[in-house]
Amino acid sequence: MRDGPAVFRRTTEIEWPTWALITMIYGAWLALTYFGTDLPWWALLPAAAFVTCWQGHLQHELIHGHPTRNQGLNDALAFPPLSLWIPYPIYKEQHLAHHRSQTLADPLDDPESYYLPAERWASLSGVSKALLTANNTLLGRLLLGPVLVPFGFLKSELVNAVGGTGSRAAIWGGHAAAVAVLLTWIVGVCGMPVWMYLAFFVFPGTSLLLMRSFVEHRPGATQKERTAVVEGSWLTRLLYLNNNLHVVHHAQPKLAWYKIPAAYERNKEAIARRNGGYVFKGYAEVARRFLLTPKDMPVYAPSLSSPSLSSPSLSSPSLSSPSLSSPSLSRK
Image 1: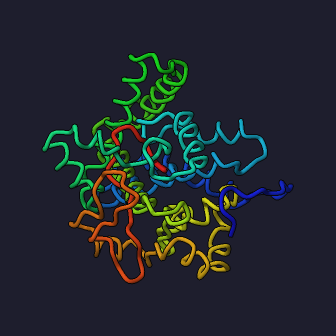
Image 2: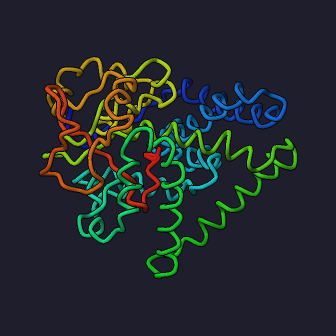
């Protein structure tokens, strides 16, 4: 596999799997919101979380030129903000900048970095440091991340607006209008309280998304060693649209989600050599190692390796706590 984005020939292929995915995700979301108040909580919670996270990964797929040649149409299909807190145009802008970064995970170059510069870390209070360190355990990322990441993103947007570093009034106006339409459907038509939507859709959906990004990037010694592979099960591969095979995505960012597994299998051994063995069998392995143990410190220090991450087969993982400015759905 080649370093950096590959050049792809556009074809007239109709991406039926992606069109089916679009139909399923939005159809399931409409059904779950409409019937949500009649469903038992134990049925609604996993389904709503799954669909919200799934749509985040659909947005990621559409950013990269799928399922049509018309990016305006792709963007329209991705626009509905089911997670409520991040405008799609800002996510798109930051994610494409992430792909252009020559030093992934560097907070000064990668807008989706979860690391802090050393000077910023040194200026934090003890409470803030403890909170961000806890957020570097998997349990912390799942429970704290759905609050810290949106809060950090919104705080950063407010600081930028007040500081005059760039006006995004039109983007936020469009986002507010879209959220108003969604809430009219959720509350006015479906009769679902806002707290219920936040508790069953937004919080757990964001939590699932952050599980994928938890070990996604690290400050490795070289650019090639900064991106992970989590092989995962068929269910997590479907949920994350194979973006857990993240090395493949960064090498071939325009490769359709349903073609990524074959590309990974063809290059599996070469990928492990290329990224310094930064490969996990699945999220159970990630949980065994880092459920309660911080995987590293939330400070950008590519020359340092965390003892908790050392392993005969793995280099030091990284993604850290949110810099409190990154939506990272690479977010999605």
